Every structure is written in C-alpha cells, then in structure tokens.
Image: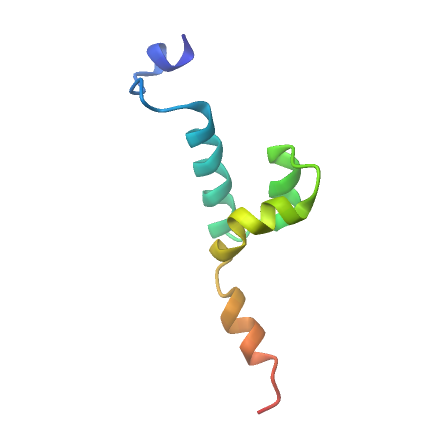
Length: 68
C-alpha cells in the first residue's frame, strides 16, 4: 500500500530501499556502527561485509598511513 501511494514501481522491494539508504549513508561518510544500528544488524561485521567497500577514501587513507 505504501509503495502504491508513493508511485514506486511494483518490482521495488523494501530491501532495495534499505540497501540504497545504507549505501547513501556510508558514501556520505556516516560510520559503519551507526549504519549497522539503523539496519538492525546484530554484528557490525555484517554491515562491513556488504557496505565496507563504499567507505569514501577508505583504501587511500589506509595506504597513506605507511611511512614510505
């Protein structure tokens, strides 16, 4: 009923919206722990597994910690 009223296509499921919500939060720099709690994950490792690659600059910052 909510989807019908909002004009969202039938082939969109709640999970798609949840995934987009989490992805956008992480790409905007929201920390994984906060996103994990919003999603109701029992362990932050679940959030990291599915969304960790979206952290902006994550890999660059890790490499920049090297002294050489």
